[in-house]
Image 1 (cartoon, helix red, strand yellow):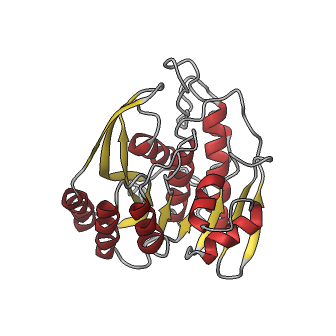
Image 2 (image 1 turned 45 degrees about the horizontal axis):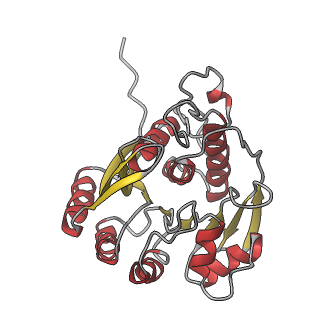
Amino acid sequence: MTEPPPPHVPVCLSIAGSDSGGGAGIQADLKAFARCGVHGTTAITAITAQNTVAVTRVAAVAPDMVVAQIEAVASDFTVAAVKIGMVGGARVIEAVAGALDALPRSTPVVLDPVMIAESGARLLPEDAERALVELLLPRATVVTPNVPEARALAGHGAAGLDGADLARAVHSAGANNVVVTGGHRAEATDVLLTAGDDAIHEIPGARHPDGAAHGSGCTHSSALAAHLALGFTLLESARAARAIAAAAVRYGLRDLGAGAGPVNVLGVGYGDVHAVPNAGRLGAAAPA
């Protein structure tokens, strides 16, 4: 009897930093990719020494090495979607923007602008923020900031904005499609602006204050990229990403380490985590 052909597995590329504690960065991205049924590849922009308590050291990867990683992946794989996370300084941003030209212009790019720490401290110097807005924001298919990051992207006059107004302000700053995630909002509702029709879509969900949220933003943006790679619409992908990230927080590994525990996107220790709606898992129905 002839064996059936193996399923086609799309390839996603994460351009981001490494978290030695395994909670965020490329480690979170690879787990989210696996959760959604795509193959993950990486271009590492920085190496961090961190755990659940603190980041003790950061070493930037040379821009030409970042480019070499992207080109190595693109030369051998058909990259179906890209997720960009921590990019560090302006030189790396410039290198990443140039290296994206090795991919077809139609390749979806999800930009998770890692700009502001939970403490409120800025993570990017001013020249790097300018480079991100000028070079990566227009190139991204969709940008997924939280509220503080969205206000930083929108610039002067955005301090009091939220929801649809904030999403539109980020779009006016040069973004295409925008998802303002709900973690910092009064209600845990993501707000998606689709640029083609200037429509606003609210994506509600439960808040899980007793969960563990380290890596939730990385997980959300990677799940969104994975679903775009699988052929789902932006709205379908944003809804799936919201559900997957929320479940990862709900089932978060609170007992690991002395600080904020990592999200649990693979459902380690829980038998029912995969009951969360996830259209992108292998074996699920193909998109219409």
